Image 1 (cartoon, rainbow, N blue to C red):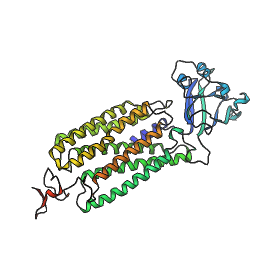
Image 2: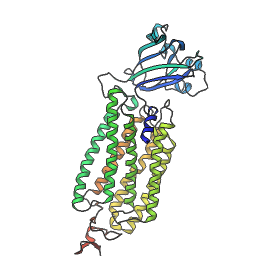
Image 3: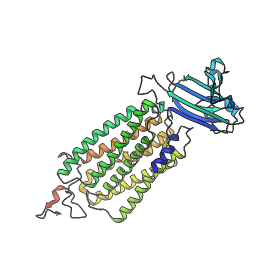
Image 4: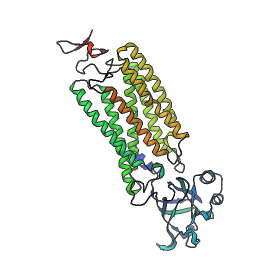
Length: 448
């Protein structure tokens, strides 16, 4: 049921580059769509039709400056004042009528549809600017007293039709497809290595729950990258992709993040390394924190769908839940560092492992707050989407690789944390090293 509701809401979540729809409103000026065009290569192809009784409707093309779209949208200006922001000689107004000036090249004609006269307009626009720029399409008829009606089909492209990698993609997602392929290959390689380590650990009876949690986190993130790849690969062909699959993929990444951070907190407390179980109070605190963390991730995603305005270029990191999650991430790091310190103080022979884990994984914890600040206050909105995709994927790969390096079961790994076999556990607190384990005739582990 949850995904049915999400699918119904997704048109506002994913701005398809091939857009088809109907506008019917009592207003005389409305937002239509947006796209980040590349200079010289960006092309808008359109097909519009509407009843002659609603004439004369116009398409307005605003670009992303303070005196254009930001001045027109959500302002107290009248339709005429919004229209006056545009320069007709710059081809930013397309009058949808057969009597439009020739330089507009609106290519409109009158046709008869079920006994009623309609305008049908088919044409294109090319875009030239000093940099990739967001363009916003609006529909208006400042003289209308009966509102607006328009049936439309819009194709917005950024390359030659033979260039499958970039043809349908807005510039803010220009490299999304190759990025997902790169990280999918990287994570599949990590999965192969992880399966090899799993086999070795299982053969030694050292496949502990914490390593299994790592596998779950890895599989969830691989599922995310594969889902994104499937979406962008189809998107490259039809300009629509699989919006629901993209949403599910991003959800998988949030689950992977929560699982991996939970794993790190458990390791910091010594679970499966220095002890068999943790206290009931610690379990309850951890459960509450994980629940809050997961709820924050879900809320952040729903916030983007339900709260964000599709007429504005926004990213998940700009939402209130994103800032709350950044604070929770810092609190998790503090908890993680404190727990690691307490564990090392009780079990000093694990100092090398915990020092390495604490230093290397601190970057993983701090990556989210730092990237949030960079995304919201440093990056331009015409590159933010693809940069954040690359950074978030790279951080996940970094976390997985670091964990594998520290826990790899090769003989020369001085950081290897597991020293008790899973079928020899009889104490709440484990021996600190393999040399403390003595095997009795009953097959149980004991410590001197």
